[in-house]
Image (cartoon, rainbow, N blue to C red):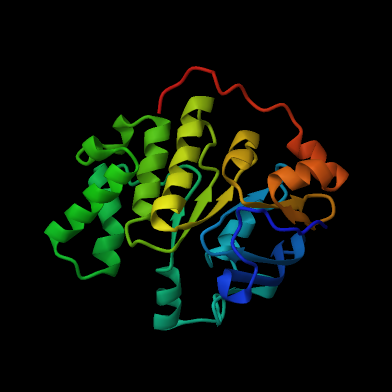
Length: 269
């Protein structure tokens, strides 16, 4: 497995690591999904989880955010094991990251602004006016300043994705998890999402972990990319996409050399 550093990636020193995954094995009942995963996620990097359909990308994301417990191994934030932490310690860990699920998962019965304010209402003591101001600021950061009072159903697919990112950012976590942020979007809208991700990292220092199989997004945003092999049931590569495309294992190079989509295709965010 290749493991050289991307020139744009932060130092590999342990104090630069935000998340450590150690000997992680994931199962559904008796079915093995992935085994013995070992990697770190560094501060201020865009880390992509990639691989073919059914390899366990979204399952890994659910383990990273604590929605599923591993069959073996651990996910560590600093010195804390996510899966053995409880009470206030666990709540504190979960406030360190925001999550955008694949379909956006906005509440249809609430306005866009109310969706973004929900984490603030649940996890902070901010006043209603303070919550509204934060929500408006986050929506402005993702280019949706005029959508505060709109219903999610009134937004395009790309706009719903951006609104979901704004909600994930509401508590200003240092870490964002994005599950297939470009899924189902046209190429131009996907490119806008990529630009937003890079802007969040640049302006706010946010660490982003993204599940995707979209080639253009992988090459546009990833400092490092982890490849999950559906046949070998483990990770087989971790490096910059450029290094993997040039020198990675055969299956990884084949995955990364598929024909990219045409970025000139029409579409609107």
